[in-house]
Amino acid sequence: MSEHKQTLTDKVAYRDSRRAAERILRPGRTHALRRFLSFLAVAGGVLYVWFSLTRGFPPEQRAVLFLFLLAVGLWITEAVPAFAVGLLIMGYLVFALGTTLIHPEPWDVTPYLNTWSSPVIWLMLGGFFMAEGLSRTGLDRRLLALAIRPAGTRPAHVLLAVMLTAAIASMFISNTSTTVLMIGAVIPLIRQAGRDEPFATALLIAIPLAASVGGMGTIIGSAPNAIAAGVAAGFG
Image (cartoon, rainbow, N blue to C red; front, side, top):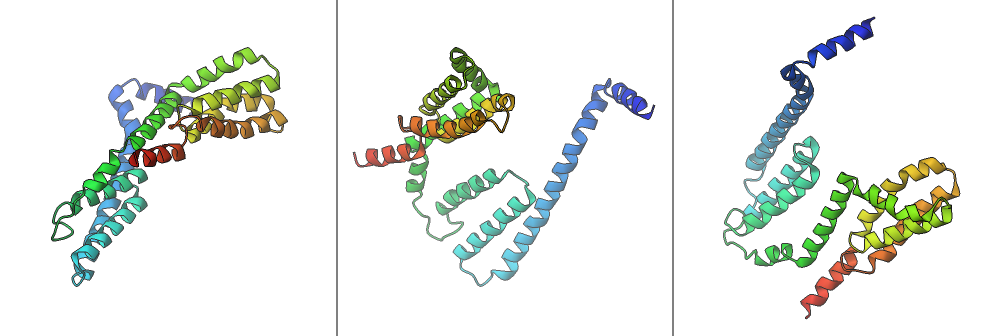
């Protein structure tokens, strides 16, 4: 009876969109507030250490120590995602080195900025965007279903179709991303066949092998290919 009353109460409560939104968003707001307060506490500690213990340090050492403590505090409190911390620190260093914030004489940051504009980086980034788009839209599973449909139901034919699909996809997407997408797409096949079946083991082994072989076919297929192409282009 109590479960029925609770369910009925939930239904009535969710009829009011404002009450429903408040019930859904309240935990997220509490978590965000807790992370913000933790970040303020860490930032206060960093500033205290910076002003009290680094008075005799050169400006460069003070700046590096401040960035180190700030990065550690952001990682511990998770005020921002971990990858954003790295980007924030690198971006600030490139910006600060070109000004007088760290050193009395600004540095020439052109070489660092030219590295970010390398075509190799944007080529790999485009491959990652493609992989993420396939995963979010479910297009990877649809393409796999179309690829293995002509193979029928024989395990050997299905395995060959999966390997060919992984090899071809790895020519346009990073082989690591291809492996992740393909393994996620064949999980239903593995569950249907059974985890202890040789076919399931063969799928898990064949996908990374096929992706590695296919990744050697194009520049974007593997990070070493892109790096080698960038170095070769630099030498003309």
